[in-house]
Image (cartoon, rainbow, N blue to C red; front, side, top):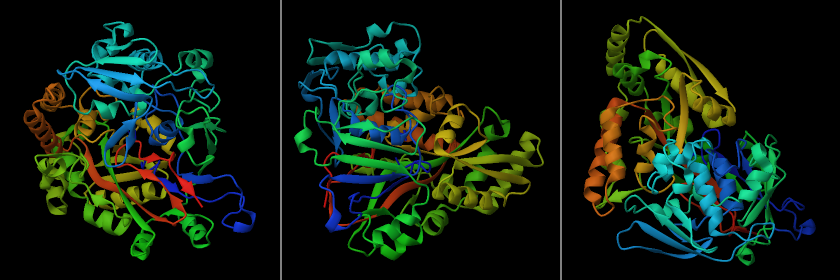
Amino acid sequence: MKIRSFAKLGGAIALSALVLAGCGSNSSQSKKKELNWVQQSNMTTMDISKVTDQIGAQTLNNSNEGLLRMAENNKVIPGVAKNYTVSKDGKTWTFNLRHSKWSDGSPVTAKDFVYSWQRTVNPKTAGQYAYIFANIKNATKINSGKMSPSKLGVKADGNYKLVVTLEKPQSYFKYLAADVEFFPQKASAVKKYGSKYGTTSKDMAYNGPFKMTGWTGTNDTWHLVRNKNYWNAKKVKLDQVNFQVIKTPETFLNQYQDNKVQVTPLVGQQVKQYKTNKNYVLRSNAATWYLEMNQHKYKFFRNINIRKALSLTIDRKQFTGKVLADGSMPAKGFVAADMSTHNGQDYADAAYEKDAVESNLALAKKYWAKGLKQTGKKSVSFNLMADDTDAGKKTTEYLQSRFTKLPGLKITNENIPYKTRLARSQDGQFDMVVTEWVADFPDPITFLQLMQSNNAYNNGPWQNKEYDKLTTDAEGRDANKPNARWNDMVKAGKLLANQEGVIPLYQQAQPQLVKSGVKGIQAFPTAPLWDWSKVTVK
């Protein structure tokens, strides 16, 4: 989302926790258990069918709930569905729902899931994540306008049984069932709020551990308040989670040192200073930061030698080790490492093409000269767009210093708010953009399908028929033929790397200091990254 996707530069997460009334003082401490969580960017929407940013997905993951819930160690646990069965041929999944409620006390039924999924794949909704439903029977035909949404392979058998029919067996469907995009939606709420649905905290329905309050759609603060009607409310210990958008994470360390906050992010040299501290935590994400080039707007980005030259100028080890210096690692490729393995081999290693991510300025200049000649140019200038966060600014400054080592190249940096960057990227209003993808589930296809020619997230768009065939074949493989599927994905990854369809930069890490009073933070390498329903504070 992924992502969606949150640890994006613009949505990179800085978190802090404190007991509000006392600010760390036991003498005036409130009885309410509250957690303060600082975001570096605003949300874009809470509409389940339209959400694309990670901050929105994180908030939805805690204010709403799907059939299953993500848990640590890449596991899923029961959510609205208390259990499920899969047919012998792997195509029919039957979910038995518990008697859960919306925050207004009305029942959550199988019909709410049917309505939600049909709404998302309906082309009139224009949901960017509609593609993720492709393996549900008839979803692709529906999304292309060739069939009615009512024909989607999901049916309510009474109020508390949901039957899903897939086009083919899909080993990772259990993860999709826990994804935000597969959450239920209350039809009466969508119809009641109309175009306002999901744009403010009041214009939304909730069925998760918390319900959202205080968000106007543009403000920098909002809250998650414990939902008393949640089926597992007794296990939720926090009364409230408070969010505030702040773009200067360095200030959190001072609050931590003054015992005013219990959790703080670390940036740059702070990591080196505190990595031996007993409260230091380094969380790794299945998240890759990369560069997209607008090949529709600028023909020179279609030239493979130009793309290779730009990639070869980047010293990823220098960038992650000395500029970011936060534990992030150089990207081996587009797909994140330590996420998915087959026969004991990590996908990132299997698809690794050293030449695609190495630093070689002399070779870069040769490719650059060749590319300029082929495109009939003597000089090139373009804007480099990224978020206006600390990491975003460091990234554009570093890339500008490296790219301008190529003769005749001029770079203008453009750091803008995360919400604006997302919108402009989706609308194709950029030259080159620094962006990120966080895996929706632990399988390489969650990355690879993004670069298919017609994918809504391929903002360039880079296009390659062979790549499309390999990834389509991989998606179409029977889940009982894992070797062939894996080989297709490895070939696709290598092709993308050698063609520099996108330019991978680094795999993000999230270093923190967490005091002993904060327990139960659930952090996932894949989306939605955070679950606050089990957090306790002292």
